[in-house]
Amino acid sequence: MRSKFAKGFHAAASAAMLAGLMLSHSGDAAFASDVVEVWKSRSCGCCTGWVKHMEAAGFEVKTHDVEDVDPVKRANGVPEPLHSCHTATVGGYVIEGHVPADDVKRLISERPKAKGLSVPGMPADAPGMDMSMGQPYQVILFGTPDGKPSVYANH
Image 1 (cartoon, rainbow, N blue to C red):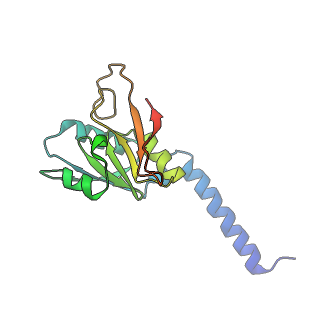
Image 2 (cartoon, rainbow, N blue to C red; image 1 turned 135 degrees about the vertical axis):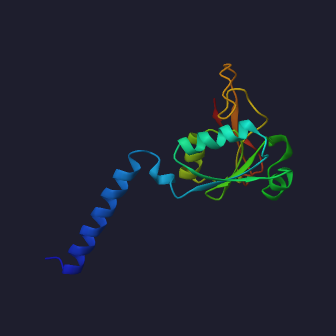
């Protein structure tokens, strides 16, 4: 026979698990607490497009319009060959450029030992660019313990 404490604990744990399953069913609730902070140029339309992409995916986004994003890139350890037009942080990671929201969600879920993800340059078909030209691009995982960037996703 279980004690009142054990019965109450079991009921509370079951309710919490059920609530978690219900919230995670949408795929977005698990990331609702992860605020994406973006540093970008005020005049950059594709950066604004990426912010809208992230918001549509369920992220809360806070933007910082700055004159020069390079100091933010340096402070966050983004290697120069991986630079793009904006830099963001979320969930303890750096997101450089037009990284798709699903890749950011996967990163936060898997929690690899790395600094973050980058889509170097400004690929035409990346979120925020949205040119639909059929040009493939890669998402790069960087800042891993071995120091070697690797392909995280192909798009």
